[in-house]
Image (cartoon, rainbow, N blue to C red):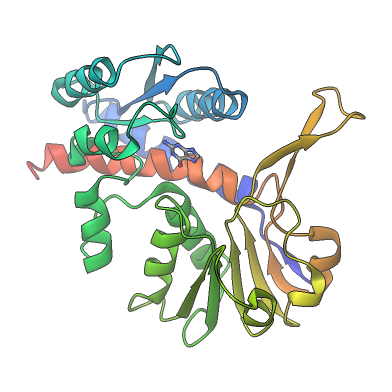
Amino acid sequence: MYTLIDGKKTAAEIRHEIAAEVKKRMEAGLKIPHLAAILVGNDGASETYMANKIKDCSEVGFKSSLIRFDNNVPEKTLIEKIIELNYDDDVDGFIVQLPLPAHLSENSVIEAIDPKKDADGFHPVNIGKMVLGIPGFLPATPYGIVELIKRYKIETRGKSCIVIGRSNIVGRPVSILLSQKGMDATVTVAHSRTADIGSLISRSDIVIAALGSPHFIKASMIKEGAVVFDVGTTRIKDSAGEKGWKLAGDVDFENVAPKCSFITPVPGGVGPMTRVSLLRNTLLAVTLREAGK
Ligand code: GUN
């Protein structure tokens, strides 16, 4: 029998902890943390992320603001806004929702963000610190996965882990975190050019699927007792549902789950933890600023 890793419940617990922290700050006359977000265009999935992020902020007592730009915003205009937020003392942390339209350079946009306000932990300075094991802002999804590992007391030391996907925001950073001292997993990063991926997966104790291909991971690939994190959130057609779509993970959950010791569902697994990481990074940003760091 497997344990379902309930990201929704864990994220709600963490939001309670953050809300208590915010209450203490208010009582001490300290600043209410403020998370801002920039959204370019009106991609459906990004709109949903944004609405949830704003709801999360109000639930924990953070101030939040949303800055919108049209799909065809010039890069210069976007970067000017980022610089304005960098200098805005009321804003403690902010994010730029990804993906961006093709005419905008994600790297240039991310590099314009003040690393001290980088609630997503995507800036090269923060990625560099993460690689070196220096405490700081961690990328939101990897941070959420690590927190689930800790709270569910999942053993990673000496375990073989395969990360499928090498994106800058999930695959690459989570592979680094899991191989670090303290986590101590032996990590393989697989990607679209990996040969015989099935046999690599079937030898792995921990599987982190972040490739964005619905139900790619089948039961036949999974080792008995494996731990599976499903980061996939692809919208697929669902004519029965009122929205007309539903979220599909990268894992064929129904058939894979019975072979697992732990597994995350989609939705309600990694996703809510990503959002809570933003709140944690924003709280860290405000406390570091107060400490003059
Ligand atoms: N798009 C998908 N996931 C994320 C995330 O964690 N942060 C941002 N900014 N955009 C995303």
